[in-house]
Each structure stands twice: as C-alpha cells, then as structure tokens.
Length: 117
Image 1 (cartoon, rainbow, N blue to C red):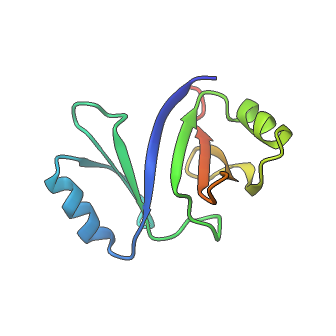
Image 2: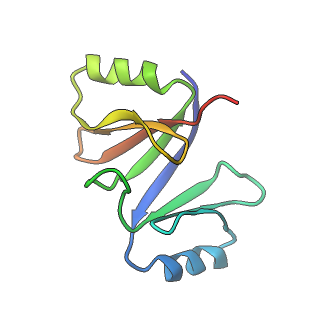
C-alpha cells in the first residue's frame, strides 16, 4: 500500500475566515465545494489542510484524511482487523472512493483514493 498524503480535517462554521487565515500562512485554495475547502502549499502540493462545514454524505465529520493508492485493499485490511467502520466504502459523486474508520482514540479517519487516470 502506498500513502499519497495525510491531511488534517478541520470542522468549522467560519469557512471564509478560516480560509483567509490559512492563506495568510502561505497556503492557497485548491478546491472549494462550498461545504469543503482544501488548501495546499504552492511549493509542496501534498502539504494540505481541509476545512469542512459538514460532510456531504455522512453525519460524521472526519478528523483527518489519508489518501492511499488502493482503498479497497485498505478497507479489507481494516475491516478484517476488527476496526469500527463508521461510513461505508463507497464511490462519491465528487470523484473519490472512500470509507471512514474509528481509530483507537475515537478519531474518525477518512481513507480514500482518487480514481486512476
């Protein structure tokens, strides 16, 4: 399994103010769907943070996201290991395949892959 990036997810009701703050720190907006904004380093694009007002397809907002090369293999390993899946493995309309799992500390991890191009 290859991990492509690990991104902290920050729940906020102050989306624009939060975005503007992180822009002052040198990040730039690379995605904005209204309910979720991703900011990245211009010089190191995998250095990112995500701001979420809510999650579009889950009542649970994740604490961090891990992008992997094969989300189905990770799902099989995690489910086989007995971890609590709190959002099922599914293809989302915005182009990712993902699931949420609870870590031993009660943190929700969004494990996802982008389709291969």
